[in-house]
Amino acid sequence: MKRRVNPDEQLMTALYTEHYAVLINFVSRYVSDRHKAEDLVQETLLRAWKHIDHLDPEPGRTRSYLLTIARNVVTNAWRAEQRRPRLVADENAVNSVPSADNVDQMVEGWLVAEALERLSPEHKAVIQAMYYEGQSVADASRKLSVPEGTVKSRAYYAVRALRTVFEEMGMLR
Image (cartoon, rainbow, N blue to C red; front, side, top):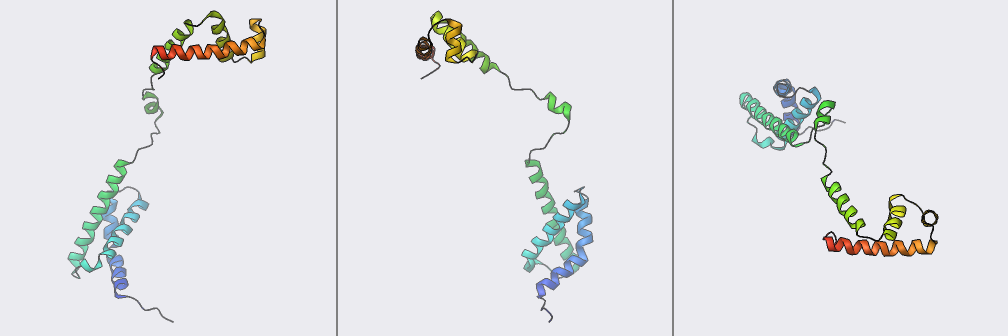
């Protein structure tokens, strides 16, 4: 059983066989990758097929029309490529990019140090042991020679005092 061929399909087959080589040569002048050039020629022929009613049957006009579409497709692909971020493989270029500064961290460190200076020595010792040295309540209790319950209450009140100091300094709202 033979399939009926649509006149548009015949026209597209004729366009492909007659103009593919010219289109691939034209696109290859602007695109170095052969696979990408083939994709752009396919896109050109697809756009021509979508607007097949605009084709002029005269051979010179048809080629001119296809080359105009190809130019637009290449231009659009180039513009899309320019919008995409590029991966940098050059190690020297990557290393020369300035790193983010740590000014905010330094300022926060100074503010926290200033706030800690406003605490009582007992509260400061508990904060130092538990939050900076990472000791448990039991370890801090042994280090500071006070009962565990005292360490817990000092930690609670030290954090509240720090919150008050931070609010006074304008760091919390």
